[in-house]
Length: 296
Image 1 (spheres, rainbow, N blue to C red):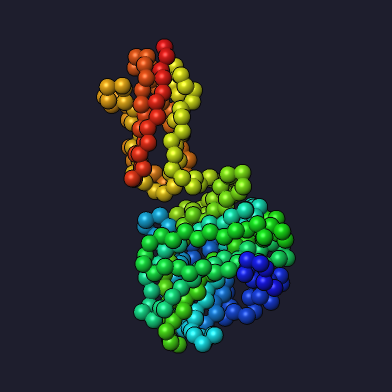
Image 2: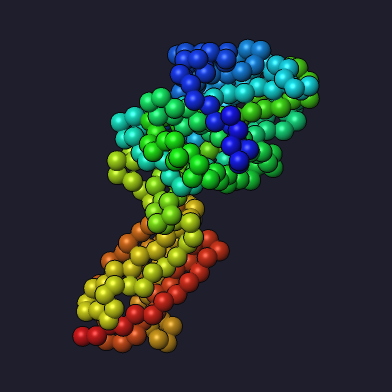
């Protein structure tokens, strides 16, 4: 059936659903991070080049190659990858977000789209697919999950779907980069299910901020130690420094590359006199500063 969002919802036994694909066991497919090939809809699968692996620059690459088949007056190759979350069995979020980018592809590609599906013990819900730009830039996709929560409260498996449309029936394929699979909730919490640059367990949720920020230190005023918190939305070269009121640098708290996430730094001013100090955060193109008061 189709709901008011134009999204197809399928409730079925998984074996029946997967029977419509050119299913492969995945034993010959190279995979990492517990993502497995679930199935491919096409003329055939090139198992030598269909794989997923860690990229050097902090994301996971999914390669899918094979023969396209005719569908709706065109030719497509559809690949489904899956990852299990039965042990954690996380709650369905209000919004699901995933970052994608086109890495490379066969010259037959006309356009591409990406999508996902989630599954609990007896329900399989297929979300609509969204087009993927082919310019190589990161492209954040967001899905409203409020209607899913009407029939599913938790999920144990998630699917990543990649659809390649070609100009004509022939061998085709593409590599896409994927990172930061996360869920956002109405209370502002963000649960990261998979960074795609290292394994993450949702038993110990990580929180991925939606905007970069620098919080007011706590306590303030302080003597002699205080805590400074900041958030990053993407991997950045980070500088966090402390200055006195005449602009002299008195401490360097952070000077290195950091992943996206929330951070907390301790600042000990036992060797500094009482007064007002400024702490400044620079992360990529983002710069912000706050004042704090040391009282001895």
